[in-house]
Length: 192
Image 1 (cartoon, rainbow, N blue to C red):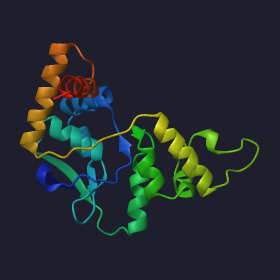
Image 2 (image 1 turned 135 degrees about the horizontal axis):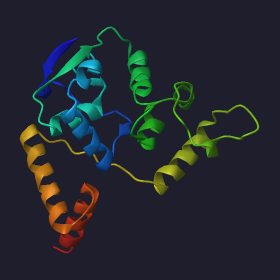
Image 3 (image 1 turned 30 degrees about the vertical axis):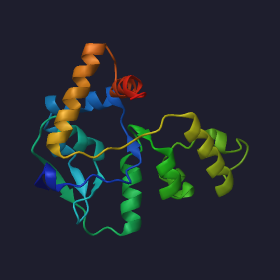
Image 4 (image 1 turned 120 degrees about the horizontal axis):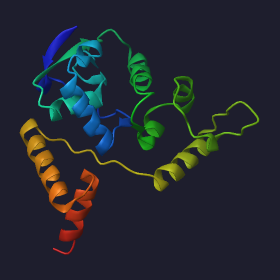
């Protein structure tokens, strides 16, 4: 295990797992209260310093103000092993970005790696069949009915500025999430 400056670690844009506002705040608080956890579960990166495991922990470490974090460099994995690792590392926490999952991974692999694919995709009386058209249609239906994600990238200074402004507006307007703040700002400025 090594330590790396946070700015040298590259978030994985293909990470299919997200943690929403309240759960993210809990993760930040957890890291602030128990930073030793990172020694026990370091961020895993490939040889190019792209995160394979720990995207949300990296984001939370940045929000917690850490300057460096423990890492493990997994530079001997094949591309297939990297893809499998990303999924298996994320099976238990956060929420899936179904659109990214549908476009970047094979459904059969996701199922075998422990991803809970909604049962509506399968006939309960028999083994799951992986009909790509049926799954694509079901995933499209799911995606269109649920929450979507917009990812914005900031350098550390911009990130701190944006986060502090979002928190300030949320407190002043008595809003519960960053999503609510952004919606309020859009509504206020929609006609300009």
